[in-house]
Image 1 (cartoon, rainbow over the protein chains, first blue to last red):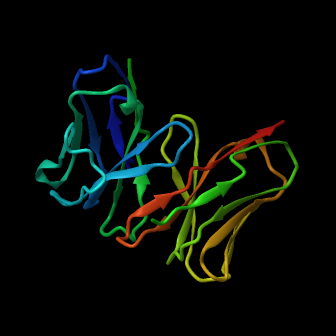
Image 2 (cartoon, rainbow over the protein chains, first blue to last red):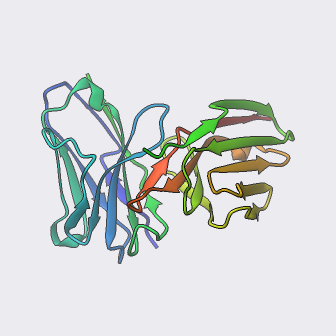
Length: 114
Length: 110
C-alpha cells in the first residue's frame, strides 16, 4: 500500500512570494490533515478535512493560508504571500475515517522563506 | 489549553545504555500516542495507550500511561543506533485532534 505522497519535498522562496504544497493521501482514507512543524517543535494542526469538507480550520491563518481538497482525494495548501516566519516543515497526514483512527504521515515539505 | 511537556529535550547516549523519556501534562487525556520521527520523514506511530496504568511493550521499548492519564513514559532497554530519532508524544484534545509535545531528540552512538 502506497503511503502519503507530498510534493515538493523542499522549497526555497523569497518573502512575499506565493507557494503551494500538494498531498495525495493513502487510497481510501477519508480524513486528511495538514500540520506545520517548526524547528524543534512537534507538529501543529492547521486544517482537517473529512472528505472534501474542512471540519476544523481554526488554526489556519486565513489571511494568507488557504487549502482545498477537491473531490475528497488529494489536497493543496497555499501560502500567499509567504513571510519569514512561515519557514517550517509542512506535513500531510491521512486516516481512514475519524480522528481516532491511526494517522499516517507523509514525509513533509520543508519550506525556507528568505 | 491542553499542553504536553516532554523531557529531556535532547539525549545522547552510547549503544547498550538504557533510557527513559517523559511526557507530562496538567490535563487528562483519553489516550496518548508515541511517535518516532526520523530526519526528513513524517512521524510514525509506535503505540497508543488508553487505560490509566497501562503498560505496553514493543520489543525493547516499554510504554506506560500514568494512573491519572496525565503523563506517560517511554523506556528503551539496551539502546541501538537504529533507535536514533525524535520521539514525540501526542494526546487527543477535546475536539479529537492530536496535540503533540515538542519531542525528545535521541542520539545513540555506536
